Image 1 (cartoon, rainbow, N blue to C red):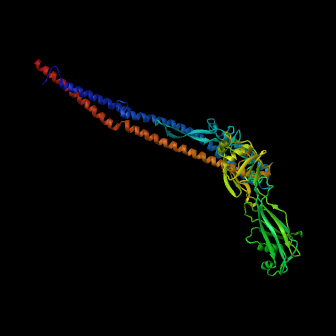
Image 2 (image 1 turned 180 degrees about the vertical axis):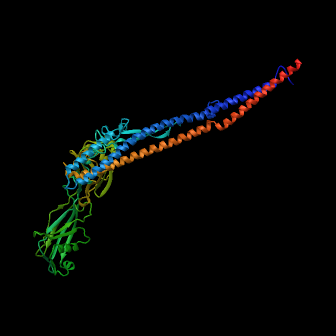
Length: 583
């Protein structure tokens, strides 16, 4: 049905034309922007995800820039360290040349001086954006807090609690890379961290590389002994006899450290006759001619060897003769035995005695005390002082650290100021050692064994400190700028030891810087890859396919032309009806 008032066909064509025009606008926008989703109205979910990812990509770019700064800092320090390594290596070779007594050491020192100046220049020049790790100004560097000693640089990417990309920092301990520090402690300077004698636990020695020995004070017990000079042959006839009593182990009542009751020891009876001599010396015809033979006969008379019978028979080049027979407690005895020895009740029917006779009581040396000469010292962070302590046959290993000192003294500086402080520190780690007393004596201190609980004496006693080790030693007690082979030719060996260690420290520091640089470079590469991947993901979500959109644009344009033609035809039908009525 055709209506003059309502052209349904035209209205339908118009709506189709408007829809086509809207699609053309949408497609045109996609082609011109290159985006399929350019606003939340296009796709709220995709637009939201893409917006977050774009923000992450922007953050990654900032992280990349920060990593570039960190990389530049490390690269600058590494370049300086590598240059310093070459110079120190050159100084090492010059020191080898200086050992030749025929060279002109003044000229060699001139070259060393130039190298020393070069090291200063390298350290001063290794600065990036005002930051210099090779020449520093840290006060008391090895004691400084992290905020003064540790430099933080961007090193890698991390994710915060909100999932956003963020920077992870790398802390570089400047004390491990500084060549010269204004307050000392740099790699090429003297190291002041030595605990010296460790409060008396070790001896000073000029012959060792560290200046200190691995051994400390010691005191050892010694057994009681009776010695009789051999004064000639002893001949036993058929009825001759010789007898005496050896008293062993009577405790010394005058020992102020040994409380009563006192052991009276025990007696060993010795009896010698012709038959015993013949059994020991079958070809001697009853005559004992030497100290060795007398010792053999006495041994045979004492079952079980409860005492050691020794001898000496030696003539020196000067003609002096040393001939004697001795009685000693067995070497490994402990307890009160061996604390004393005496010979009594001596009788003989022989015409000579060989020098044997009654004697007074001889007491052995009991080492129940060991004194230490104290001097103050400091245990720096990271320093471990190890040592072995032995007393009365027992040995244990101990360690003194910064934490041990501070817990024992309730301080925070690691300094042991007095002998009273030293006693507290030692008691805190050695308190369980059996029967050990650690106490001050005057300005020093001593280890002592409680004799009321342990009555060991002589061979069974002794106190010693040994195997002393400080983990950071040997230290550089001379700086590289102090090396002077012209003035101090006798120091060349020591210079070599110190420069060798400095060279090793520089290599280690350069290696650590190189490792940190590699870490940052890996992160930079990773962030590049991550940014590319994220951008690709954003493109998958919101980018337009231009080939499809171009094809769609042509189709819509054709559709628009057809719509216009259809609308024209629809409008023409009313005109045709009007023409009929004009006829």
